[in-house]
Length: 343
Image (cartoon, rainbow, N blue to C red):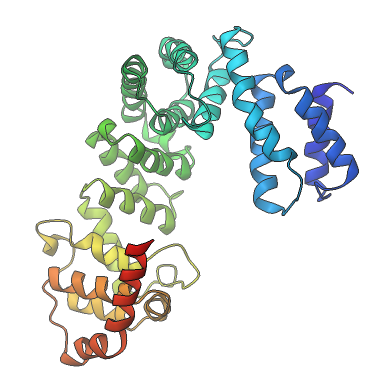
C-alpha cells in the first residue's frame, strides 16, 4: 500500500467511526509513521488535522498518535531544508505556516527553515486572495518570531496582509467567514507589537454590518478589543441594547458569552455615557438573570467583578445587594482567590 493510500484509509476509518484501537487502524498508523518523510505538505496538514481530531474525540491507549505528532515537525523541516516542496505555490506556503504555528516554537525551533519559508511568502503575498491573506495574517501572529530576520520578514508580510484587508471591497469582506477575522484578532495577542488600530476599526465595523457575524462573533471581537484597550462605541452600544432587551442569546447559561465580561467592557471608555444613558437598568438585568446566578454559583468572584464594574459605571446599588455579597459570597470568593494564588 502506498503512503498516501494508508493516510486516506486511516482518514476514512475515522470518518466511519471505527475506533483507532482496532488492529486495522493500528496497522495503518504504523504505515503512516514509517512513511512520514514521504508525505507532501498537503498530506502532512491533513495528517496533523486528523491527529488533532483523534486525540480530542477518542480515549485511545495507543502511543502511535503521539509518536506521529512528534515526528511531523522533523518531516516538515526535511521538506523545507531539502527543497522538496513547491516554494512558489501560495497554498503550499500557507499550509506550511499553519503547521509551523500549530507545532509551536517548542516543537519547531529551526529558525533557518522558518526564514526560508517567510522569504518566499513575502515575495508571493501579493498573489494571495483576501481569504488567504487573512489566514496568513493569523498564522504570522501565531508564530514565535524571536529571530530578528524572521521578525522583520513577519512584519513585512503582516503589513502587506493588513493593506490587502483594509483596502478590500465590502462585497469581498461579506464573503469572508466571520471566524477568520475574529481569529486574526485573537492570534494577535501572541505578538502584541503587531497591533494595528486600522485593522481593529475595520473588523469592528464589519462585525456590526456583516450579517455573517453572530452575537457570539461580536462578543469575541469585543473581548479582543478589551485585551488591547481598543474602544468601539458602536459595538458596545449594541451589547448595551441587547442586555436592556434581555436578549436570550446573550443570557444563554450554556453559551460562550459572559455578560459579566461585557459589563467590564463598558468600563473601558473614559466616557461610558456614550454607550448607554442609564447603566442602572443594565446592571439590574444582569444581576437578576439566570445566567448571572449560574455563573456566581460556579465562581463567587463573578459577583465581585460585577460590583466592581457597577462602581466604575457609577451605578448606585441598594444596601440589600451589598449585604448579599458580604453574607453569601465574600468568604467563598476569598477562598477562591487564595486557591488561585497557590496554583
